[in-house]
Amino acid sequence: MGKKVSSFGRTFLTLGFIFLYLPILILIIFSFNESKLVTVWGGFSTKWYGELLHDKQMLGAAWMSFKIAFLAASSAVVIGTMASIVMVRMGKFKGRVAFTSMITAPLVMPEVITGLSLLLLFVAMAQTIGWPAGRGMLTILIAHVTFCTAFVAVVVSSRLREMDASLEEAARDLGAPPWKVFFLITLPIIAPALISGWLLAFTLSLDDLVIASFVSGPGSTTLPMVVYSSVRLGISPKINALATIIVLLASTGVLTAWWLARKVETQSVKLPTINS
Amino acid sequence: MSWGRRSVIGVPYVWLTLFFLVPFVIVFKISFSEMAYAIPPYTQLMTWADQQWTLNLNLGNYYYLFTDDLYIRAYLSSIRIAGISTIICLLVAYPIAYAIARAEPATRNALLMLVILPSWTSFLIRIYAWVGILKNNGLINNFLMWLGIIDQPIAMLNTEFAVYIGIVYAYLPFMVLPLYTNLMKLDHSLLEAASDLGAPPWKVFFTVTLPLSKAGMVAGSMLVFIPAVGEFVIPDMLGGAETLMIGKVLWQEFFNNRDWPVASAVAIVMLLLLLLPIILFHRYQARELEN
Image (cartoon, rainbow over all chains, first blue to last red; front, side, top):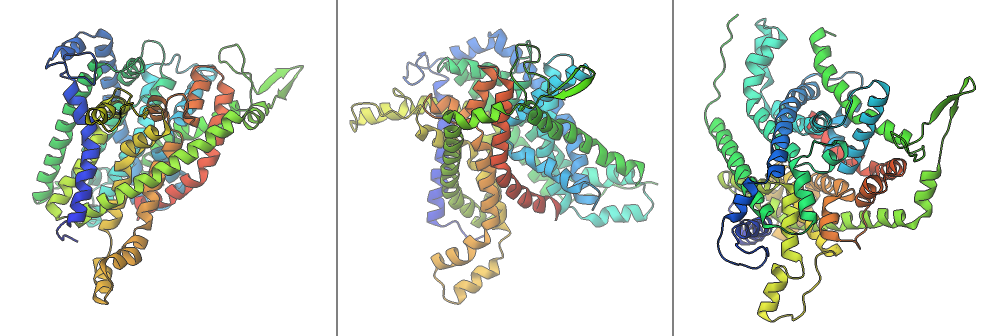
């Protein structure tokens, strides 16, 4: 391909981007609105940001969400990478079909089903083996690691498949043990995919309302849960301010990651030296 | 099998079996028990009394689902709403994916990133944005009334229409991505051959491009349809009381009525309805993951 975008295509792209970005733009504009009525302009003000910073409940929930997302993304990258190595490099083994099903099904599973089923598992486990004793941060973390693993596995395995397998073979032929091949050859090459997988998992975890609502317990309120209960009561400019901060952080993060990835791509891939 | 190989397979395998597969077995089990005022709030399937185990299988929850017409209507309207939204999504996403795939390599990456960027910001907040746009004294109504086109606000929020907008808005990137991947892999020489043989552009598109992008259309549609059937946030925030969707019914059954067994039965029936689409999606995705 690589032809110029036709005027028809350009019109559709423009309309598509207006549809995608206009609601977010409106949200940001009204976060600077003096008036409490979110749809009537009452003058420029940053007071909602000030109120947001003094909202103890919101800040506490944000910190809780951040901790869970950080831990969930990090664990999901480890398990998800293992899963993609199994799918791309390990060939046939017993239970392979079941394995790939457990990677693909969480990608589309309705959240209410995942949430309910995990809650019932935790309750049944607590009854029979006494662990986990209560529901809270740990149970949310386990739930998030589970669905994030599937997304990480998809991102990492596509990179793993594109990667030149002969590099690994060469290292193996030269006598490097499997773990050394992985850490010296495979890992540096798939590192960009691990970073984007981590970021994806982090965002998905930070964003989850439904599953966390099922498996959380008293004292473990996440940010989406606070946002949800506050928007249920009606529109509030404070939520607009929060949205603006989230949009700002997310776009800075994504753009930086995108820029870094492009820089890595344009550079020639330097091979690590094997000293053995 | 070496120790290392076994543990690389074992860790993800055990984790996913324990936290993804086993939970469904438990949901299935609890869908046959009865609600009880106890902790946990359901009766045990197996009880030990008089020196023997007794199995108390209760089909009442399923009977209830099929006799109370609320549930059947909720299932049907979920499938209808998700189906219509998926079709709209496909119609909107196809030209976008097509235009991106035909763009020059340098702009292609940037355009793709712009499509994905909104989904990195909060889902909940993006749905919330539409509340302010669609409500009676919201932006669209205020604007139309200011123009003098209408003098009474049009009810848009708390209607099915709002749910369609919400689903298309939130799931659009999930449709664009597989379509784009598919269109990128398209063999360009086939298109050239068709046009060299005298086919006009529209004919090339409908007889070559469209049939060859079937896999992307199926994957994208399943990626939208399946989660949309069980969607909770969108019908709850935009659909109001009159929009009936099964994800919302399950949520209310669990959180408001605290009837875990009925909620489990609702989940099992939903899973059965979605089994075929999930298998379809799995077949596509497994091919993508493996070859």
